[in-house]
Image 1 (cartoon, rainbow, N blue to C red):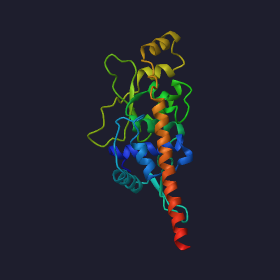
Image 2 (image 1 turned 90 degrees about the horizontal axis):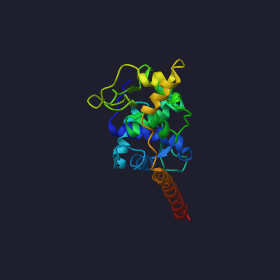
Image 3 (image 1 turned 45 degrees about the vertical axis):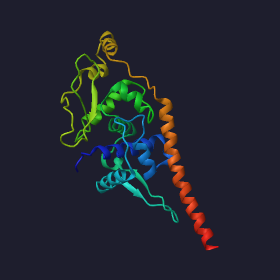
Image 4 (image 1 turned 30 degrees about the vertical axis):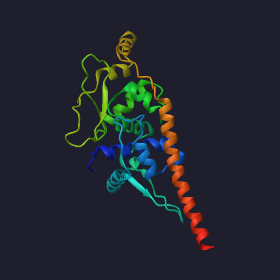
Length: 242
């Protein structure tokens, strides 16, 4: 099965994976809510301005590849919904899904950044746990993530997903990152581990917390608007028969 996705497909799949964990009460999602999630201004890089036509096309493409399921409306309803099927395809754990979703939505990140950003979906108690999850995804067949070459002047290594189509995939490092291995090795001297941590830049403070809450509320509002429209349609249909 082809494991490459274009930019819009990556965004749509990432949104479905994210919202399944952060907003389970509104999942599966309507087309309107998925579009709102794709166009969020927080937790997204790059920020997009997609319309429902483009999002629907991406959903159709993902459905054909068995990664998205169309959920038919309840009897008498008209609101179609969608959910991802990555568990069936990749057998990822919740933590693995959270890491992949973050990489799909925000691009390459360090293990510290992933720990901070993934906490919206599932807790990571330590950087060791993040490193173990990244290693499982890296050693999968085929691999889902890979480390990028170390940037000059930076100790922390960034990781990327491997779902880019040909021509978009960044150059990756085929060898396991030395810093992450050292931090996970029990024989590593405390002073060496502390020095590695001190040289690594601190995880960025999430300054967009309020914006994130606003985006979540907007997604919930999109769901409520869809449900209200469906209820209005049903009432008008009943009144038309009286």
